[in-house]
Image 1 (cartoon, helix red, strand yellow):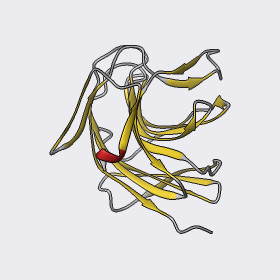
Image 2: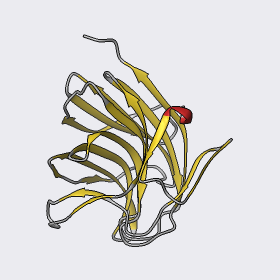
Image 3: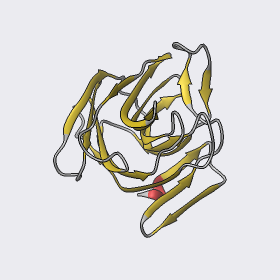
Image 4: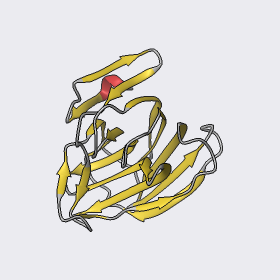
Length: 185
């Protein structure tokens, strides 16, 4: 799958190895638009695959989070003002589930997860303008974390994303990345 992806904001340190895509974040990287903080950042690391119809994407994420707002997960992106990111984020001393839906302005939803955030799976299904975001400890049993409207587009990018708004140096391993296209209609 990695051969189908291309970088938005390529980090200086990354490699595809047998165990997956290894990424080390750069300083003060993020994806965010305006809400609550008054700024826009679009410089996080995103390795996306082009998708031309509805899909289900899955991804395994492994990392040791330490800095405020360290984050890694799955991104679905149409352009700089229409995207989502879903995964984990280090907030107030602990890892939490985090999702941001951005349609011109970003929102932020957080939640607890019963399993380990150091090694977990996410899944996103986009179908008919609805986005289902799910999390799993084992990649087999899924829990719905969010249902949100999100526009279908003739061209969308999907893939792993990571960023560290307050520091540099988060090491993330992404694996088990898969995109299953949905039948048209």
